[in-house]
Length: 77
Image (cartoon, rainbow, N blue to C red; front, side):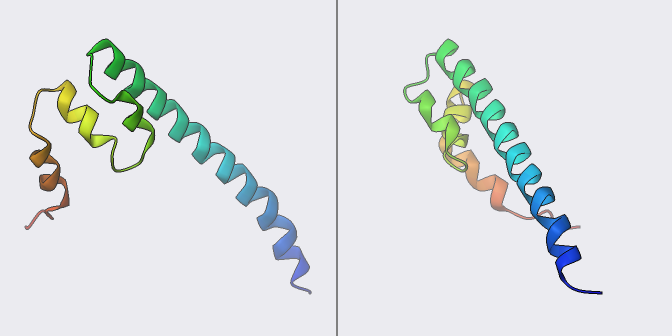
């Protein structure tokens, strides 16, 4: 058995995964963008940048941007 079988399968699977991941990223970014426009956030275009999308979100819920740091604190059991 050769290694070409694995490469024949992984190519289309990886391509489908990239297309699906891009579609989910775009839909999530577009939804946050439209909510930012409706909430009159100063920079709603930040919704399309992965970590920066938290800043317009915090502005929408009227919280300080410093609350983003709580997302990086692990939960201790």
